[in-house]
Amino acid sequence: MKKFKVLGIMSGTSLDGIDCAVVEFSLENNVWNFSFVSGKTVPYTNQWYAKLQNAIYLSESDLHLLNIEYTYFLGELLNNFVVENHLTDLDFIASHGHTVLHQPEKGITLQIGNLPIISDMLSLPFVCDFRVQDVALGGQGAPLVPIGDRLLFSEFDYCLNLGGFSNISFEENNERIAFDICPVNTLLNHFAKQLGKDFDEGGNFAQSGTVHQQLFNTLNKLSFYNQQGPKSLGIEQVNTVYLPLIEKFQLSAQDHLTTVTEHIAYQIASVLKIKDSKLLVTGGGAFNEYLINRLRFHAPNTTVVLTTKELIEFKEAIIFAFLGVLRVTNTNNVLSTVTGASKDHCSGNIFNEELLKK
Image (cartoon, rainbow, N blue to C red; front, side):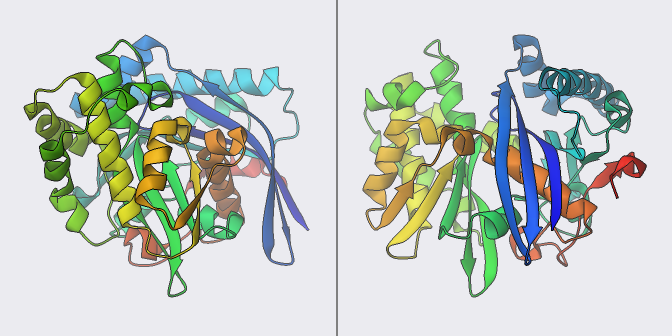
């Protein structure tokens, strides 16, 4: 039986912090199992939040400098986490890094924090940069989580993540299908900040507003929703398409939140075609009770499952740890049916590979 103990790292577009998850994986009779050991989300300081939010506007040379600075910052943070938790028996660390550029149609995707110096800082093997190879193979570089959905969460018909964006994965004709559905926290947090909060806790602001029917209809007519997958969204579309459209409608922040929340629930429900299905919901948006209630309203034939707090918060970090396991065992960890790449492949760089336990 193969066993691995891995620290998985995820930083998402909603910029709520860096998720660190310690996970044990085992392979027995060709079936992967995992157990969650511990986890922590380290919030970004206001300074780092601003730097990462504005990274999209930087020149190439300034992005390079930011990459170096962020790599040292992440290395120090991870070293502190390893020391604090007495993690002397880790096999390796697997990290997503933080996406600052994602333009797959131009062959560009950049996740900072994935430079070789980080492995030297930690004196541990470091598996990272899972998206670049897929873009080079003509794929979207996203989503990457569906291989974990297939191999670790097969009891659910759908796996939905509600983070900066909503993305879903499911089996169709014996193929894994996955795509981004719409922005979630990248929009909701924007309008919550206008009300003095970092996010709309429980959806309370949205619950107090009114749906603006014209804005709701206009959002639903966006061309992205008519595209066939594989397809993905980035912060670029939020800034250039969604926010300008939404802010043309001069509403209160509460009404903006109500209408956007309704739009999110409606768009998610529109892709749930399997009757009497089970939908696993994870990510920060799973704690938005109003959004979940609106989703249940729009998808009455679907059982919406919210599992443990740990799985809701750390599922993506768990799966990036798993992507690392697949990488070090030379097993395909990216599905072409999901990303649109020319073939399934095994993606990710391994730094200090010689330190891997044989």
